[in-house]
Image (cartoon, rainbow, N blue to C red; front, side, top):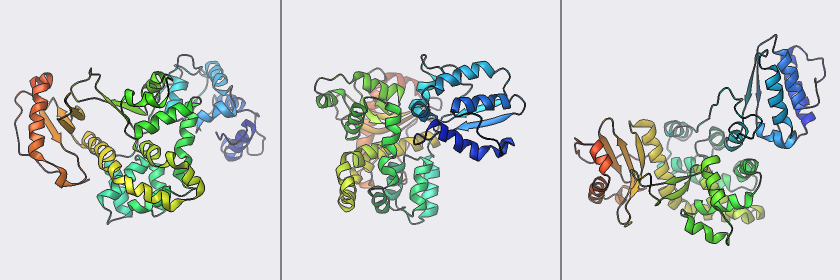
Length: 390
């Protein structure tokens, strides 16, 4: 469903491509509305089993506002007789609004739900290595930062030959780059209203303003608690990062859950003026200047924890810090069933890792996490290992 076309034009395009499959290539579209076309297909499928996929279904609210309500009525009317498998693909936030919101006409009508995930770290690494055998760790982290592991985003860069960090940044800095408006379009579709507040919050969090006290100053008394709640619970674009083992503490940091959006809000969204001016080289140099700090901390820790979750037998993975702020560990991975625990320093250079300090901080961790210490009784200490780079 294209939001750049009317409902009638969407139907005409659908019919042009699919009428032959139904054996009706010489017949005009059965209706001028999407709802009318779906009703026709529901009737047809009573005789012949059929699968219909409506992609970008969230655009229905713009193209044919009554479609969601009409679809619920049609489904209740024909579902006992139809043999139609109707698949609706929607963006994550919009999907929950349509199926989970108790006020939505489609609430409780979905028979199943499948959430598409980004590529795993292993797949991302394999794809880049196939396209760029001499790639460096920085190239891999930049690909992960720019794309978030989304297949289409990786395809756009690799097919254009943008496989080194510099070429990737040069590509996304172009005024007509695929990445300039993609995130904005998706988010505006999901947010619908209060886009300015949501965008401002996401930009500040991407910049490192992780606590509420550091965010409220930008809104001059305007309440942001509702927006923060929806960003976390409804849209799942941010999460609260707490010290591992301290789930009830109020000492937490907020972070974006998606590295692609974190990159966009950190490096592209704030520089729209440069993009509109076509100042590609200035923007490219600005991004390359500050990118190492971003990939060396946020992206690298996200990559390492994701990799641990994919490859290790761990029940919990997260950072840890104490109230003093003097002791912090980048990643702690716990396997309570196997009575194992991994403490990891995650740094862009091995020279930045101090294993002696890590051992001291791990001792502090065990002292202050009685519940974990009890569940891991019998823990055997082993020699610290220096893991390979990503």
